[in-house]
Amino acid sequence: MIRVLSTNITSPLGMTTEENLLAVRDGRSALLRNERPWGLPFDVCASLFSQEQEHALLQESADAREPFTRFESMVLHSVRDALSHTDIDVSDSRVLLILSTTKGNIELLDGKEPVGDGVFPGNTASRIALALGITTKPLVVCNACISGVAAQVQALDLLDSGAYDYAVVVGADCQGAFIVSGFNCLKALSEDPCRPFDMERTGLNLGEAAATMVFASDRVPGNGGMWHLKRGCVRNDAFHITNPSPKGEGCFRALEYVTDGISAESLATIGAHGTATMYNDQMESVAIERAGLSDVPLSALKGYFGHTMGAAGLVETVLTMESVAQGWIPGVAGYAESGVSGRINASPDLRPTDKKSFIKIMSGFGGSNGALLYTMGEADSVAMHGNGTYPVGDMPVARHTVRITSETAEVDGTSIPLSCNGKDMLTELYRTSSSDYPRFYRMDVLSRLAFVAFELLRKAMGEGTLSGCDAMLFNRSSSILSDRKHQGTISVPGEFFPGPATFVYTLPNVMLGEVAMRHDMKGATSLIILPEKDSTLMSQMVYAAMLKSSCPDGMVAGWIDCPDENEFEAEISIYKHNHNNNGRIDT
Image (cartoon, rainbow, N blue to C red):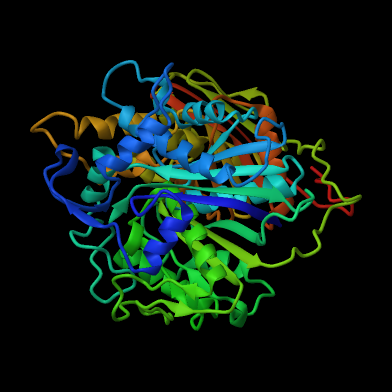
């Protein structure tokens, strides 16, 4: 359990948490129709910063040595405002920065060669950490729409493990031609303000924002912060890389985990993802009913902010937290009549509450689902392992390891004979390891690399399967190959032809969706982007996650990076665990 020390929301509705809270309480929305923005050949209904707001953010973060981007400026404003309400020394080695984003500085991708380092999210996080004076290595959580929720889960795991005392978690994304054209080619955008869960919903609206939550471990003395993140998890539904499970399988299992031992009557609200897309809202309603939570008041905030992507999980958590603390639940803007089959308790009107707990849920591409349980009040006794501290030095040991480069492949140190290299080598490995999954040929190169690595790992296990495993992957280059390909379809005047088959792979966690589908992996799946490969930090994160994992067969974890179709690296291992009485992991 960890506690919230301070927050900030920076959005078109305001530059502080208080301004955004007041706007939502008054029923104000930032969604507006924009006429052919960024040179796109269509109008866009979205929540975007005004020119005055953008100018103020850029001026505030101005640095004479090197200018900050729009994305970096909104992040810096949000974090600095949140930190100003604490007395944390951010230079301390016990303070961690976690950035949640889907595309970060993607505006810097201009089709030119070579690609600038600023496009890579880990480098962006390092620039932000340096500007803030944070000295530990930052990490980027990139799990599509659930990134903001997944980042909070990472903070919970790492602080509970004893690796850090404080976590500064910030989520952000800004909109532009890259993202908007992609969602438009998926036919997911609504021309009008969105209507979550409504009979007349026609799709989502995009938005831009940054939001920050500063967390402290409950081991750290101090009275600051009355809200506690009690539980959090990520679950994959292993159903499809873009469509959610019709039965709400992943969302249901996430809800089941965070509500274990919690009565529905104690909850003020369920903060839904509520994208106003046909399939997502339907799926969430089914999961909520399956979890026995139909009578809990439902809130959904996309009608005020739009879908703010990497910021959404934080914006919506903070807004819900602050409104419940004041004794009210936001109305679902745009909602009039239920258009979902699962029974939900939704209303367009603000509703009072005297309860002090809530759930936040999110779902996204790659089969991702996340859930959080927040409670207000005194902390429960913190369940520690052994003598009251986690044995962070006792890192897990790999049972089997697969290593692949653009020229070699080996399993547990034994080389595999190959007749070619580069991307053709991946096809050769596929044909020799598993030729019964023709979907392989539809994948991007990053997903193909992950696919064959997981296939070889499964074969190394003999009769074993990966279905009972969590998965945590790390990389540096995000999805740069698909990013460049998608950018090429929108950057030439008169040749605008973005397509779904490319755009979906600009979300790098989709590779986890591919392997989850293949191996029926319904546990936690997470993608972390780092400035560079760091085995110590990676082991630390794997260990922290395994302390909380309920998957019986352990975790698949490692590095999968593909900066070029003929230059890539994969090194993944399977870690089996068994918690003994000292809380240690037996491998």
